[in-house]
Length: 376
Image (tube, rainbow, N blue to C red; front, side, top):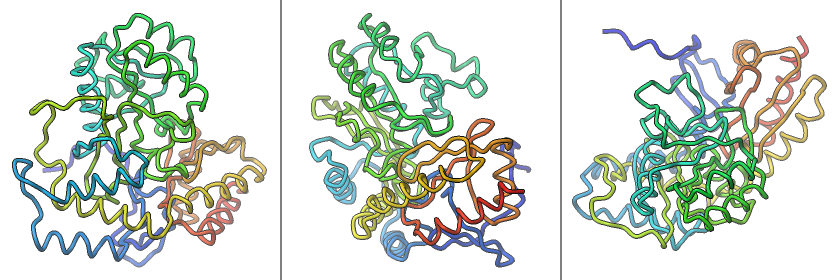
């Protein structure tokens, strides 16, 4: 049997990681400024994380959600405290797409409405409802097409207001910062106005913080720069530093009903142990503050470099473009000639999504190698 050939693969296989570095079988070292799609939040093989996961799997790796699991309660309490949402409820699942599916279904259950408002260039996942709310026809099969999702341009409050006034929408779903499309932000004023329009029309507001959350923007959630409180928040990516885990944070105004949501693997013992360890390290090592500081430094320095035409983002969620180079060309130069992992988005954007523990020395190494790469 062969693998289903849907991924474009670089001819490099990391076999070990440490902090913001990965190593191949021959011992070659690479600086990781992508973290496997923003997943590695506290660094590869952090000792406290390794111990927590190892100790838990030696005790009990899994049991179903039909019995008590105190690790879930510990995770909910810690996440509520650090995120600033201690009064919200927590539903645990496995992936970002699943979190968004459950968020939209929960909004539909709560409001009795069927429609979802989404935004241009959005990416919310690849499962049925998540991909229907994703503005990319290349990954949406005919099976996924639905009249229940309406798209309006990002940051166009008049278009959003016009759609919502029909009072047919269960929810509006929006990313804290759009990642896959190339690091595009909803403005703080747009988020505030959208929140108000949702309240006026009985529409729930879902903040997809799957890539932009968990400290990546320099705040726990990117939407917190605007001061709003969404009805539902979704998380995944960096929540468990590589172990499959995702979460839906739910406003106290939304009632729960037995059986309305469910999952086999979500919130299992091993996932919870990993997620608690991530929050412990984030708090003890002040990684959100570090993301804000190092991110501001990187953005400032990148904007000074001749040939860089655009730098977007907040914290350690950065998109950049270089004159005369596609994103693919620049990524290959950085990877093969300078041993630096980065990510792509669209034709021209390179994404930086490193561990929140990235040091200034590591940032300086990237800046030095980046200047060499674009000077060729």
